[in-house]
Image 1 (spheres, rainbow, N blue to C red):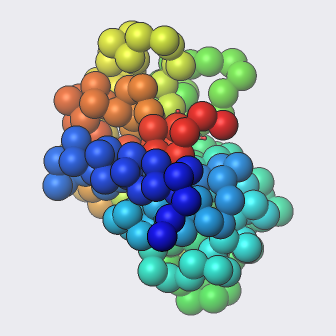
Image 2: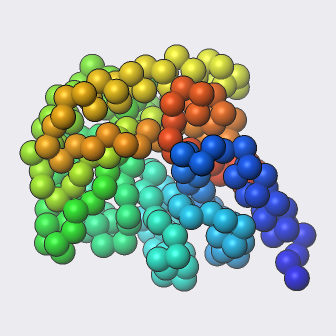
Length: 223
Ligand SMILES: *Cc1c(COP(=O)(O)O)cnc(C)c1O
């Protein structure tokens, strides 16, 4: 028997999964949640879990293991690249050549090729991470020279508005960049994942071509 809060998470995961088409991956954004909460989400059908901080993720990864895929969805500090290389299945937040090189080096050392997404600061916001749209092609071209990471797509947060319709142009522009990069056929670049959309915006993001949504509040309740 589950207690009431866990029951709510279980039901929320089921409900959100029903609203997502089969080609879209649901990544549960699990920051601040307890092991019990995350475990409940896995029991309800979650297959991908995102964390913003390596240190917060480690005990949860340790407990749950490889029943799910682990995504880094927060800004990765270069001094955490070694642990990220060992423990995560995808890093969604590559936004500089220096970070890409650090991760590539750590992956080379353990004989791994890490799937990554390049994070785009689609709203060109000064306080946000991600590469500016006008610098994206150059960055991907440089990263494509690294042999131990594979660019599998793009990730964007988009400006956080109340009305998700306001995020639509940023999602659309990111999808256009995604398609343009796919047509360039660069080595180590396979554009297959477009990570955009959160609790309030994921349905709009999916309309604009998202194949990966990162959802926290709608699954786990308010933080
Ligand atoms: C927290 C977080 C999310 C999910 O946000 P919600 O509004 O709680 O769904 C998605 N992406 C990133 C990078 C986050 O930090």
